[in-house]
Image 1 (cartoon, one colour):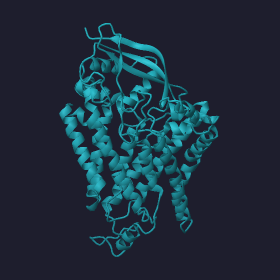
Image 2: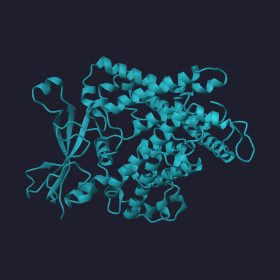
Image 3: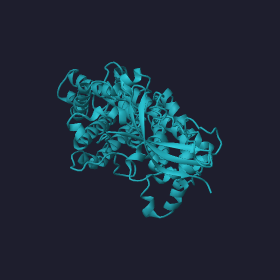
Image 4: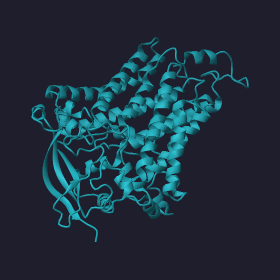
Length: 498
């Protein structure tokens, strides 16, 4: 690093800009496919009803994060246009077209993605209440100030990405240490691979690994989240320690965190949480030679206008002012998150301002010991004697079906179904969901893997709880499926239309 310019972090900038844009593309595609049946004009939790309640009252407006739908009345068509625009802009950034212009061009493109997706998240209610939503928003905001391809990235923005990575990893580590006892006695991963919200194709194999290996997993997790994050700031020591050592330390720290996130990707489906963390971790990997060529070119002479800035020749003054102001803004907004990291009652996935910058992160402070699934069944019999199951795309259903890999794509309905058995009562959206099944609503049925009645409305629907566990190797050899399940109780229904 040389003053304002992070000359060895050109490759990191490429990964950040293109990787974050790719995840925005996934997020907008997910929204395009799922928002309307979940939250649209006839959704399970209609966004127009929320916006009507907010109305023009300033006290209620402050409860929402900024959204264009406060000024342009929501419609499914406008939501579709917003998603289409987001997909086009994100694809352009992935290809690298805006980065060929001056730095304000990719800045405006990233700001469009940030504000557009925030407009969706703000009215997404429980279906958009996940920590990775605010993580993607904050990463997208920072990515707007990485600059264009003809100049090295600003040091202040690279350091802000380190600070974001630190909050994500260290915050998650502290949540676990302060959370369930299973993280302190090293037994958490005896259960996690089996009980996580949406298992992947390798989750069963991970669960069946020896218990001593699961203890090593937990120790490795604590090391990667509680110790390693401090070392991503090591490149700053190059101010006092010449040579490559500080940069190597930062790169090794990033590599360790990337490795742990890859393991989570391989053994589960956590939407884009792990993917965006991997992308952010590349901000700590400096590669001499990529960016150094740009540095040599920039030193060839002063910028147009004759003025030469002492921190970096060739960087426009307006860009220096903008990125410095962003640095001061993020530092100011991060103070509550810093205090939260060391607070006795640490908040998990909390936003402290309307713009979702400087957030607190964390996940899985406790681990569920048993997997209980709500299975939805329907019947066409007047007496409800024969019941058939609706299959979801990502959650366990048919015990012989191997879980699929969906991440970074986010199956929102499937995730919310996992939370149902953990609450004291079934959520309001679930009752509306059952109503849509009784109506054989095509957009709702499109969210499912299979409709046992092939588009015809059932006479009755009900919800039944089952205890699921992975089959042992011996059970599989004897012909069992991937899962073994035990019926518990009918928790709702039978319900029918009058």
